[in-house]
Length: 147
Image (tube, rainbow, N blue to C red; front, side):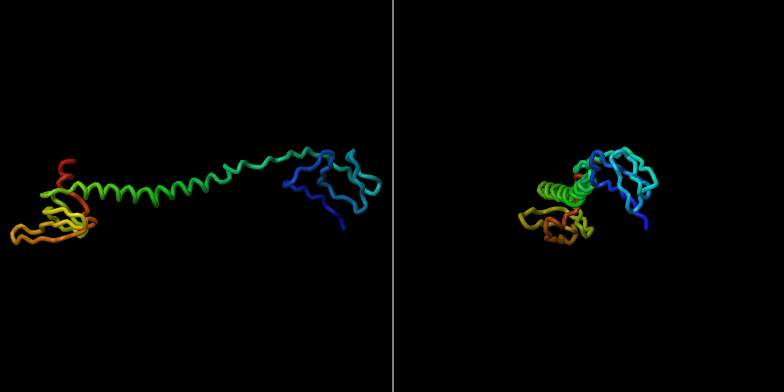
């Protein structure tokens, strides 16, 4: 049965240790000079073992941090920004503004209250509807001014 020397990169080899890729005889004693005593036949090869320094922890976690930053902007920041823009649009509503609801109804604003907006959807029958502010999808009067 032959024994093999195994090199582990996890721990640096102490100075003066002989690292060999040759097989060793069972009763061989390795000396500090790099040769085996009479029990062995092969001469150990002394190699230069470089110690690896551990990687910077920030570099190891950089991809994970990048994913969390992207998730923040995609999942939290974008919807919050859209909600703020919608609240600003609803707060700027005034009488006679043309609006489109989330159901696709085109109407004219008659009255803006705290919890509801009264809109007129038919001029000939004078049909009115009360909707909550989140039901307003767009202000059409402003879109015409912007174009």
